[in-house]
Length: 298
Image 1 (cartoon, rainbow, N blue to C red):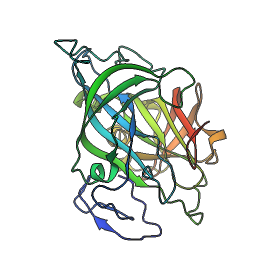
Image 2 (image 1 turned 180 degrees about the vertical axis):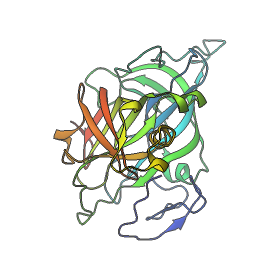
Image 3 (image 1 turned 30 degrees about the vertical axis):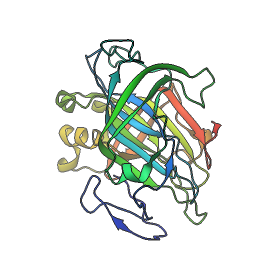
Image 4 (image 1 turned 120 degrees about the vertical axis):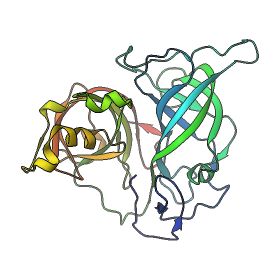
């Protein structure tokens, strides 16, 4: 998890990924009440029916001390189809891409619980189940938002939850930064040299941008800046790359939306917590909005 500890107002210890996880702002129960949508990023699966395992990205976050959306969140969840309007005795499969059968997502798929709910309750993990409408598209896509199913989103883990501080004193990163999430979370994925990943641009300082892409990494082409057998063997490299929410930097690019990673770019990225460098191949751009209000497309 990435935690922002700048300009601490009130620190409240809560349980997220670790017992000592903290946010630098109050999150009282029932707070940040609003309609909160989620971008669906499905994992590799052989199933074409039943629950979908996926990453879910907060759609869309925004800066603003009074905003109920001022967190960048990526969670590990399970999406279970529901019968539509009691007209189906058995819930039908959700009609969306199922990797690896479908190599690309190509469109935005979102779930929006129709009533407002408290984002704080989700952060506190007292709210772990959301029912809503599943769409091909969203309010920011150029094509019509098409309802395709009803479903229940069960939150299994808050993988990334970062408060968005709107202070202009928060310095921008000098280089482009993304957070990565493996598309194949199976145990067999731990040994595969070719990795498909979702990358989410790390939102850090105003105005910034919210960008989700799909990339591939041939880990046999990765190497280390410094020679170290403890860090640079293939097993250690795979472990670092497959850690959900790990941060990558791209030192040849400044951190603005004009330099966002787009297909068919191939670029070398570095895991900031270690010496691993890898060539990243961008396969598709899934979602992109410009801050600080994130109501304009890139």
